[in-house]
Amino acid sequence: MSNREKRHRIHPEIRKRARELRQDQTPAENKLWHILRNRNLSNYKFRRQHPIYRFITDFYCAQTKLVIEIDGDVHAMQEEYDQARTEWLKECGYTVIRFTNREVLEQTNTVAKEILMVCDKIKMEDN
Image (cartoon, rainbow, N blue to C red; front, top):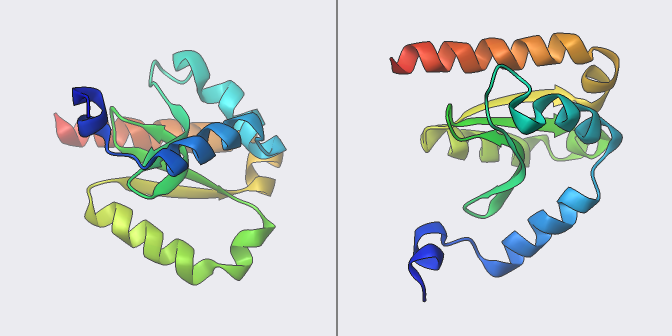
C-alpha cells in the first residue's frame, strides 16, 4: 500500500461512487457548484461529492472543515439517518449546513451568502 493510500483510507467503492455522483449531479448541486468551484466564493476551495470516512458529502471546504448538504425529496424519508450522519460529522470536528434543493434553485444568492458567512465565521474562530 502506498503512502497516498494509507493517508486517505477511503474504501475504493466509496471513491468510485463519489466519482459517479460527480458525473450525475442534481440541478441544485450543479447550480451551487458553479458558485463554489474555482475558488469563486471569496477564495474558499470547495470539493464536490467528497468522501469522508464512509460518507460522501455534497460539498466540502477543507480550509474550514465545512460540509454542505443539499437535500432533495428523498431526505424527507431519511431524516433519522441524516441526523445521525450530521452528529457523527460534528463529533469529528466538521461543521454541517443543509439546504433544500428549492432553496438552492430559488434563493441562490441567499444560500451563497450564508455559506460565505459560515466560512468566514469558522475562519475567524480558528484565528
